[in-house]
Image 1 (cartoon, rainbow, N blue to C red):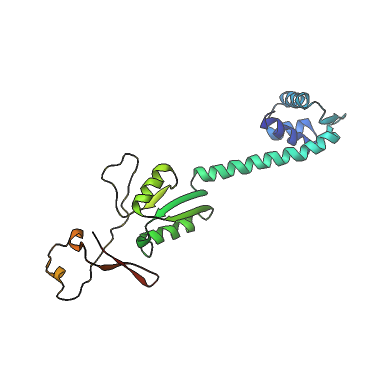
Image 2 (tube, rainbow, N blue to C red; image 1 turned 90 degrees about the vertical axis):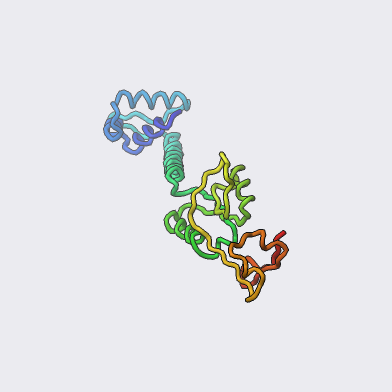
Length: 208
């Protein structure tokens, strides 16, 4: 049994006439009759009772018509859903992000624009460090991620720069670091500092 058999049967069942159904389907009437005969042989029972003018559904045909309509509707809906996924209009997008980049700027703005433009799509957000995001993308647990750095060479990952993060170091006046003209991360070795403000609280860190 093929979908065209169901479409032909539904058209005849609704028209109660082979000729009108053939015209609406743009199919030759003899070919339409053969398709219904093949369907009846496969099912093992008659779907129609032939009348001098037209046909009428048998009792089994009436029940089969309800199911055939439902099946065709489900196929159409499944096709529409799949087409939306193929065009990126629905489905689920899994995105990772580093928490210190999520407070403002391109990351939250991107999430907001995505929800506005793709209201039927689901957005699953996963906070994670950059290294953890790389592994999740490689394994397929994430589709993409906003990271703070990228490996110099990784054939499994593509990258697109979306923003440059500006970071400043604040120290008291006359602090030894104020004499350093070009500050590097290793200059902060064993120096306690506050970083990662979140929810109004700061985290104390040290480098080593």
